[in-house]
Image 1 (cartoon, rainbow, N blue to C red):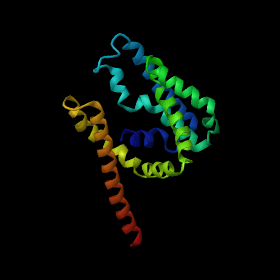
Image 2 (image 1 turned 45 degrees about the vertical axis):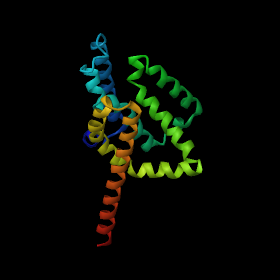
Image 3 (image 1 turned 90 degrees about the vertical axis):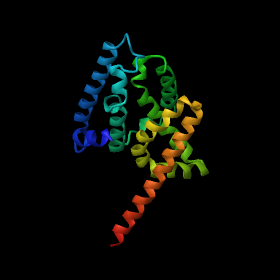
Image 4 (image 1 turned 180 degrees about the horizontal axis):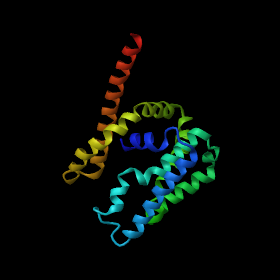
Length: 189
């Protein structure tokens, strides 16, 4: 939900230069916190963990998404970039400096995987459906996560993750269906 506010204040009707400046300051804040918290990065209460769950750490991939939607960014479709992104996601799991940029590499890899899987007959339909309900999944997943992950103490991690995904998708589908119905009714009047 933060990005609706952030988008309105820092991205909407802004030049790519001002978006770049905003992104640069978010990255500067992020790397400053990494340097400041370098001795307790694994602490769940650290400032870096707080930032991770808020917009500054995701400003770069969000800005890249805005850039690619405005300019096309054909370079994002390079197979070498896909391979490099996968390698950097893995390396980022072991290095906090690369981990901070890992969301960018993950997004690049996922965009390319989405295009590839979208060409596979059955998967294209599933991905299209997921795209339709994704806005609602974005809204409901923090609420579902808060309650479902509390079950982790009594159930296996895989059961908890599966339950989380099923509930998120089910609620997203229900909300998408309701809002689509209301939208159709309003357009008919």
